[in-house]
Image (cartoon, rainbow, N blue to C red; front, side, top):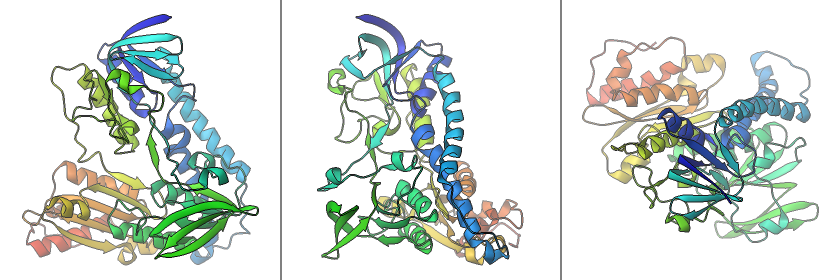
Length: 467
């Protein structure tokens, strides 16, 4: 059996693993990857962020064509060429993946099914790696819930939807989270009859209720049928269709579609790693880590989806870099997610949140004040026909310091970066009013709830008048 020794061994060559490897190399350490035989480049590039946003753009263009008469433009009949839609996506993603693989190729990489055989030793095929420190960054896999009949009946996952060169006539979506909402809107806007079944009372159940309500209203306006507060009873065949039986308000209801899309989240990819051999513990979902991203084995760190708490690429990158630095530093730095937990949904309208939500404040008993302002009363939004949604500020009542920002509306994923900057610099609602905001822009909408809060809380240094 061939043996290798390195300073740092990274299990998984996705976003967290790649940045960890480059960080450790920058510290002068010898680094190797251990990776399964699956295609290299990571979830975000191959089956997540990038391909989904590429396809969502095609659906958005289709929507523009359908709604063009509202703006005085009369296009010809809409025709969707799915072959070209998928080919465009593959062309873009292949370029991203090739670039990432080039970077990964600068490191030694052992391909196979990694498994721990000791506290500081990993086996990959017929080779073994000993290292001073390890990072588990093996990512996540689609979570398949134990709904009676689901596996036997068959279903597609987000991986499958991203490769569909031929769309089904109808689909029943199981779930109402970020991935479910994005890809369900993609499907319905390209002509698929779409029903969404969500277990929680609202879509995007981890967010403040009005965010899910606004997104639901938008999806329903696209023609989607949405049912919340459901409990799944069973899944079964119905001729050439597939049926989902659920219970809503104590009554059984049946929904049929040509295909089922199981979009009920992802789970950490720990299968086969044999973490017990390394004295690494799981809480039954993800790996247990301390504030320095160390597992229960101090020489083994974890980053990204395997932790099981924040499935966000920028968080994985942050954790990968921090874990690599902590692994080789006498003074370790604790992870701080106060800004890193910012997130965005790429439906139309988009939704984005940074800092504390109202729910966070209530759960933590943090005093707060809040104000919102709708896009349908905002000049630029009215002019360009992007009137769905709102912006909401959450501030401290004593100084008016901004605690959180939520935006549902056009370009929310970009607009939220002003909110992140405000949080980073510990700004107040008064600071928002003192900052220049160009007119007419969507970004200036944040000044309206800021002005309301300044007046309400008597925090007012500005002498500006919003346009």
